[in-house]
Image 1 (cartoon, rainbow, N blue to C red):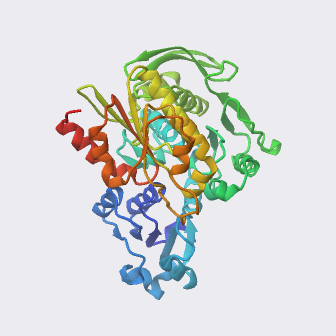
Image 2 (image 1 turned 45 degrees about the horizontal axis):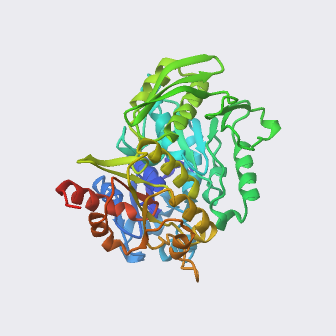
Length: 464
C-alpha cells in the first residue's frame, strides 16, 4: 500500500506514545484518523481535541461507519501495536476482512525512508536522546522532522514536522524487533541491557537483533555507539563506527564537568578538537552523557560546534524523564519513566549526586509481570538506594497475571527498613503523611495519573 493512496487510518492502540505520533502525522497529512485504546488518558484527550475519533471499548459497533465500509476498504489502513492482545475483537475483524494491516514500526519505516534519518536505539535513553537531537537540529536553518517516544518539552509534542527539511529523527524500538523495519541513514545505540526477555528469551538473541539492526543502516554511513558496547556491525555495510561516553578512550567524551544549578557545564572532546562550555540545563548526571551522544551524532551529521552547543543548551527535557514537577518550600518532587533496573540505577545515582544529604522517598510501579519475574532481585537492589520505598501493584499492560509474581518479590529483595506495598488510591495520602525532602514517582504504567494529584497536594501545602 502506498501512503498517498490512504484516505482513512484506524489505530488499534492509538494512545501509545509512538502510535499517537503517527496518528498526528496522518492528521497533518490530511487523512481521517480514528482509533481504539484501552483507557482514556490526557494524551488521548489531546488527540480527540485534535479531531480524532477515539473509543475505549473493544466493540465493532463503536468504529466509525466509513472504516467498516467494504467499498472504502482499499483506501483504509489499519495500524496496530504489538502490545494489543492477539484475540482483540476489532483487530481480529480487520484481519479476517482483508484490510491492509501494518505494525507501527512498518509504517514508520515507510515514512522515514523518505528522509535522511537518524535512528536512536537502545534499552534506555532513546526518548531523551531523540528529543535532544531534534532540538539541536531545530535550532539550525536545516530543521528536521521527528517521531518521538515521549513528549518533548521544547515542542510540547511527540511529533515534529518540517516541510522544508530532508532530515528526520526517530526512535528505533527493540520491542518485538520493531527496529528491524527501519533503514536509517545514521544510527546511535545507547545501551543493550537485557530486557523484553518475553520476546528474546535470552541476552544473546537481543544482541543478535541489535547487530541485525546495524545491518539495516545505509552503507558507508556513521554509527555511534556508547563506549563499551560489544556490537560489531556487518562488515559488508562499510560503516564508520564511532564511540561516545564518559570514558576518555571514546571518540567523544566530556572533561571538566562542573555542576551548574540542576545541570552541568563541561568541555566536549571530539576527534576534531575541544568544544568548550557545553551546557545542560536539565537535571541528571546521565544527561551529560546524553548530551555527548546527541552532540556527537549531530557533529557527524555535519552540524557546526556552535549549532550543537546552542541546541544542547536550549534542550528543556522530555516529560517523565527527570521531570521536576515541584520545587518549593524545601520539597522537591520529580517524576520519571524508569522501568528497568539499569534505568532506576541511573536515576537514583543522579538524584543522589544532586541531593546527597536529603531524605528520598520513592514510589515505584513495576511494569509487566514478566519483567518483574526476571528482574525482581535487581529492582530490589537498585531501589535500596532510596531512604524509603512505596511499591504499587504490578501494571500488567499486555500480560495476564503470573502465579507467584507480585510486588512482594521486589520488597523481599530490598535492603530498606521501610518498604510498603500500597494501593493506588492510598498513595497520595501516604506521601502526605511521610517525612521526606525529595519525592520520586517511578514507572512506565499508569503511575503518571498520580502526578497531578500529588502536585495539587504539594501546592496546597501540608504539615508533616
